[in-house]
Image 1: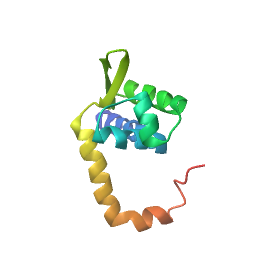
Image 2: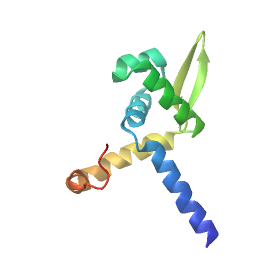
Image 3: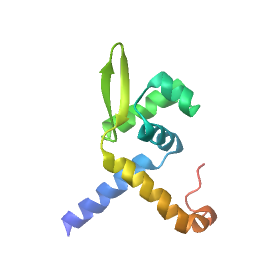
Length: 109
């Protein structure tokens, strides 16, 4: 039973990594192309400190990876399955969006 509990806890922890609009905005941008921080600022409209903070989280969780590009660091999605997951979430929303929108349990504060 402990293995199942561990798996459920890991799923919950992984999904918390996706459960932030700024992180999802960054992941959505990176799903299209690798970017340096300033490009992410221009592409997303988020502030540089906000992006840097969330990139640190996404890097630590293994959802993004980075590569040195001259004096810059270029960020990218670490695994193509993340992009697939985001696409699958969009497909699921096509089916359940009305219920998700009506749900008061997960509103951002």
